[in-house]
Image (cartoon, rainbow, N blue to C red; front, side, top):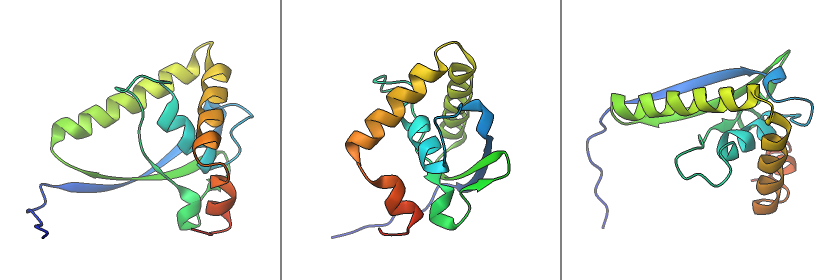
Length: 124
């Protein structure tokens, strides 16, 4: 019924990202998680799935949001993830930052209306 193949490499990647990159509307790493997912709006070649730090008791530290990635795959996939992180940072440094953040937060809250409360209160 199930078969587990030999792992081909993987990384646990703790990521800290400056709060200032997102602007004032992003208040938690759950919000930052939404921006990572939806910074490219509907472009299927954008987005990075990261786990909000609140899941691990590490949401925000001073001027940093904490997130976590679990990556498995070859070096090509890791390079693709790094490129998407760079694309997101570039997009948020541009003049559309507020528009990108608003879109990401609205879409995230529409998909999972009470995600932030559930994660922060550990009700999952």
